[in-house]
Length: 169
Length: 118
Length: 326
Image (cartoon, rainbow over all chains, first blue to last red; front, side, top):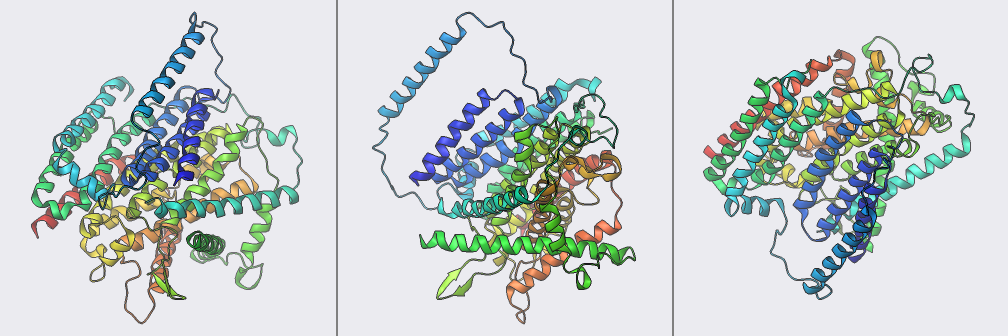
């Protein structure tokens, strides 16, 4: 269990770094897919079976495909994008400060939440994280947010049609 | 929970072994004789014209955006289908409202011509 | 530890069997296509061409590995491996028969058996697009890129109807576990209870595996060979293996979800029934290839979105209504 946490964790961080370090956009997409798959493994380690699989289906299987399309449409060339020289003044320094600040904050939150004192094998309710448990919760406790989701998705469809406009269709 | 999925990792590791063995065997056995004409992009024997990249129609983008929306819908349907029997008529009505809303979106996109592939 | 050893053993057996099936599947496909077209098919290597797979394997391994100058080398090398791995991962959740008793222990005839087996299958098959898209992009060739984009658009369109068509089965079985789904068909197969769902699944199956009549990604008359145009040798071979494993996975899934899996009259063991059903689907794949012309791309997309998707939704609503009424 711990081994999976470390391997998947390192892969997730490496993937996330790859996204910003890679010079070719498609390589960034590949790194992001690695990151997403590693996150799915982490969810599995946390007994969240349904969430892990949904993570793969929706993020890796649908949204990243969309990203690949955008890249194919805009900058499909394999050569790295040229860096523009117009850097903001003090951008690098400010970025460093923000990153360190964010890291300190996260460690502080984790420490105050009692990392390292986590109960190792607390008994979970049976069926925890399964699709059936998710479905029951969704159709009872979270029924309102569930129906609302339909409208969010509807708005997305309308948004696509409006954004693209009649001329393109 | 995790041990139900360990098998996929083991299976892929064995698969990786197969890939490594065949690629290595190939590396030892196959000829290696590249010359500029051979490494050129294939264009039916002609000298390649322009870049390998072409501009694509925005349709591809529209379809994948709509796909994402309906993929998310499908994902909600799986847990619903599993608990369908115990939820009874209530579950049915709730999901019909959900699907109905999205069908509305599909009809809208259809009528606006977004689903037309010319 | 013992569990890992068992898994390792099973994985090796599975991969060897799967690759042998793949090798002979290629032969049978060529042989049957030959008969369909009143030809003999391969018949020079061994009796009935039975040594053809060996000849093909040797040939593909000793072919020169060409990486075009323009190609993006890392992605170019990664893409076929990704394709193969995704195909293998999808097959990992397919049970090939009922659990058997061996040396006093019960052994499940699948690599993994998660509670959400169907979801795992869909998660892995939804990644199948990557090998093709990345391979086509990395080649930096017009044919490859066109083939890859067509393929992606086609696969995601039919993935929707595929995903919606099986909801009917899930409602009837009340489970995402493939063993439970087969168990639920002990009395009556789901193809009889949900024929429209089966039809949609059946059609989407061809589109998902890029087979005729949906083989536009590699339409040889217009795109040379689509996304795999620039590939040669074993890297091309891996795309081929992935395609055929996907075909086997989809056939097995169709048998599991609709034809009762390994259920059948008891004069044959379950695993034989299952093998027969999968063979039937694979034969249909080949039969269709010999019979059907290729669809035009705009027709394919309209068919997917304007026929398959609405019908799949209607089938889902009607099935749900029927189950909640009776």
